Length: 242
Image (cartoon, rainbow, N blue to C red; front, side, top):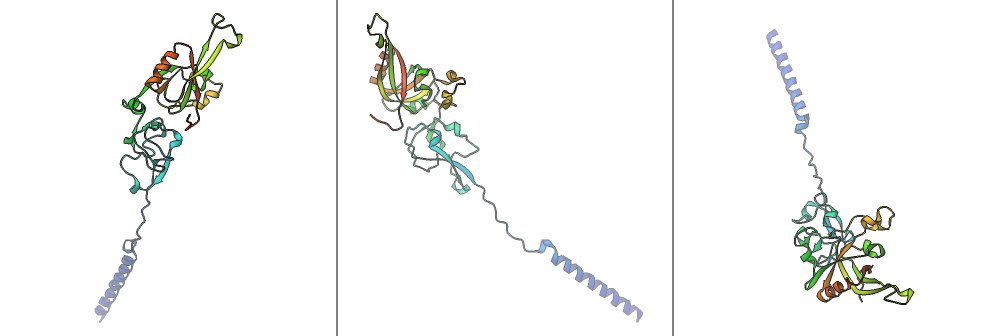
């Protein structure tokens, strides 16, 4: 009888232990239903046109900006923030038209320094002519590649040439509405160009030569005028036309 009671007691202990183990097992976190975690979609920023960019345009800072997009909206050739800098494409020339808001494609631009850049900048039948300018007296320090300017010839005469004391120096506009394509042989917009109005190292930032896009007749006229005096530039407003 005693042995029977001992065996029953041992069995009861094992049953209680088994029940306890089952409770622990079912309450374990590994057996709880897992809550699906919603992945956080990483976003990137692509360079887009802030306005319509016609074919042959020299890019300026105001022509593009960054737009946040999802991973599925990034396409081959897009310019991504962190992979390219804004300054890398300043002064680059577009090889096709872009509409406002359209992502820019690297292969559709020729950057300054590329071998094909000058040829891509010039319109059919145009010539690239470089002239020395009296920059300190003109708008040459404010002009950027892509700007349109008038070229003014200034001539100084001594008393042997003219008898009028008030007419020793004369100016004449020899070319109107011509496009600037380079400053001091650089096709990149120079940094700190607005600072030409500053009193700190102004002269070092003012270009001494300007390369213009001209047709053949204009190039001939300009080269003849270069023998007569000095050139100054007058900056024209955007989209102005005679």
